[in-house]
Image (cartoon, rainbow, N blue to C red; front, side, top):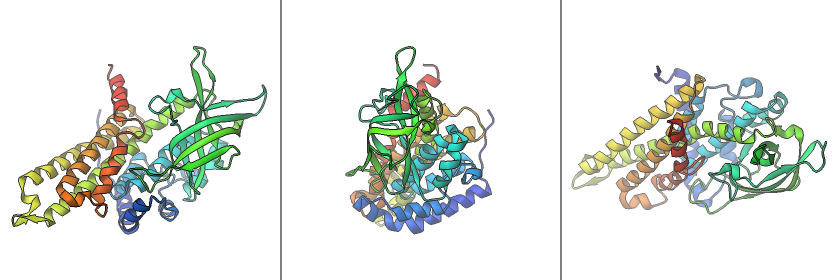
Length: 387
């Protein structure tokens, strides 16, 4: 299969714009937001104003109409300086806007998407539960009609680790729930579009996180939350398919966060290594440090090529699921490697919160777990290659 990549002028301009925003707006605030574990409404709205909401959504619904690679480049540039802000954008676009854009009715898209593309609101992806993480089909949240012929469903259950679900910018959550049984007796899963002010829905912001401390993560409790059947996303029983296909795209955004984090760790480490002196020379001149930087640069190059190929496949409407899983797996592990090696280069300073490499070291841990653990990615890949 022929594949070549060269960043076009529009993608380069986007990268420069996001990089400038990240350097001027995010870096000065990142340390304090992390320390205070504070989600920034102001920064989030500014990212929306910059055009980072609804990036791949068609302009007729208020989106930017960009290709998927352009969106991935934006996430990567944010993640170079702060995983929390990158997570807000990644979750909103791929997990928030994505399911509505790709599976929603025309009425749902017209009524919901414009408010998710103008920078004013966020949408969340309600999949994970306390007992249903990697095993997403084990969902215990249920949706049922009280009487045959009713035009409403009632949802009971709980969700956990839901990004963008418990803040004042939250406009809604796409919620997976058990809606019946299949002919083989397995749970039939469906997706519902739930508004944050729905009676019976309680959203609680989760605190004391090790990573992404200034992103919004929510725990949701649903007690007979009433939703009209027009709030069903896709067809009844298609929920698991919608969720899994959404995660294929979401894996690319997590991979972008891994690539961006790795690049940030590498660039900070290279700069520090050329400034810090021991035994009369910059530590970058010591082979032990030079080899670390060389290995970081090599792995980053490989990660970038794999991720950008996956985006190329998606943008060209080719099967990208296998490469997406590979990219998510590899980029997350490269991120962890570069953060760890970078911290080693910084030495004792790398353990201090005033240095961003310390935050990168913590943030890298989530990338091996979120949107499918490294173990799950290996299962997905092994099935694709016929194991």
